[in-house]
Image 1 (cartoon, rainbow, N blue to C red):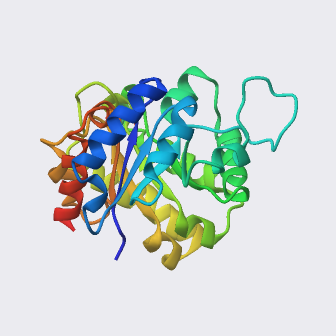
Image 2 (image 1 turned 90 degrees about the vertical axis):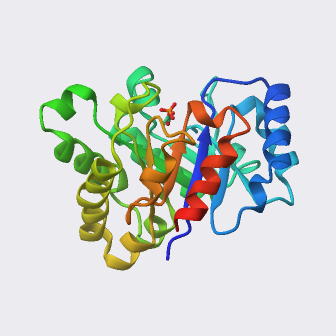
Length: 254
Ligand code: PEP
């Protein structure tokens, strides 16, 4: 049985002081007391130190939103895997905003996944199709080819330990969530099945696959009731203390 994982991607929101205030509110709400689910917050780099101190000794895990694949050197403005690992258990890799605005490709995503594992981090890999691709019936091709290219060269053990977030790009920040059935079908057929083919049944069954795209307290149950959906990657609705309600919904569904 997979433990669901609900992660909040705060994107470029909240100063370190604002981040501390939100984590305090989440802990006051009992976010780390909810059994049977893993809760994660992913603030900006500048808040990781303060947030990781607050989360020490709690069950609330911390993740980063990105890293660079080189270990150190002349890469102005970038953050190395080992630097992220000082503060984090998880790291989001290949978010559609990074692919869309910052030129990330399956090749760089693959390098980042390997670098993350090398530093002892657990990646949350994002895959998903655009609205145009969805409407053109290309969801299967796009998602499966991302999965295959991004995971190439990883070991079955690494894949078993990581998380994939299926995030249809048309549902991110738009209020247009996929239905639970749509997300289940893509996650099973175009993510878990190709992972089974590449890495075997045991790894594919152990790997947790989230849905992401306009998840909020009022619709979370619809996704968490699906057999292959093991939690959510949450953007906008993770910026408020009632993010805890989404974590509770994941615990109640399993
Ligand atoms: C995201 O940023 O990964 C995301 C799913 O955002 P939202 O929940 O706001 O759609």
